[in-house]
Image 1 (cartoon, rainbow, N blue to C red):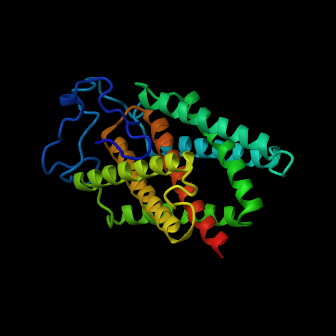
Image 2 (image 1 turned 180 degrees about the vertical axis):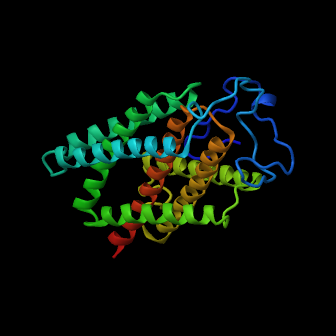
Length: 284
């Protein structure tokens, strides 16, 4: 089972084996790592994909995921703070700072695509993505805080933490169950959401003013809330991937892919929370 967040195929279960082996269904009713089986979990690291058993030193652990996720998110936060401080958004410099931010966003996007299509995780690519993403977020956040909604950035950060903590609690309590139907619904909803975003950009680019109306008013807030809910669903899928990877004894380097996926999801949530709070504050 692959996660359906904005980077749709980062776990790449079929890297080293054919689809039949890489996604071999584990026996119905089997339990893994002391956790009851369900009807959706599959083993992307089945023996058919790698016949050599992994020891405790070569299999991914939750500590590995936590450390690498902390490193990746820390890189985003550090470069965001530095760009906020070093790339001023006053009237004399905003054009230059905005140009750097757009360039950083494009580089981050390219690096994320390259990592998504690689057969193995690359810490250099993942940390590079995090660094450039941080530059973009720092300038964007500084601009919004300066010209549109002062103080909204702190609220957006707190909101992102609140959404993440809520999803984690709901997932651990099994209020959210990641099933095949859940995954398919999230994938379909994400596809529709992204198509609407593209349509909005096209309408804006070709003279439709506010595009489809997702940048202000009640429709903009509604669209942002839908984006937050999708981000929460992506996060549940990420938690499922991490849980399965640890339970099945995935190779240790997969921790970097977990960090990459969690970071992209948290950035998504932050941007959507920032969108909603900005519209709400600017309308008031």
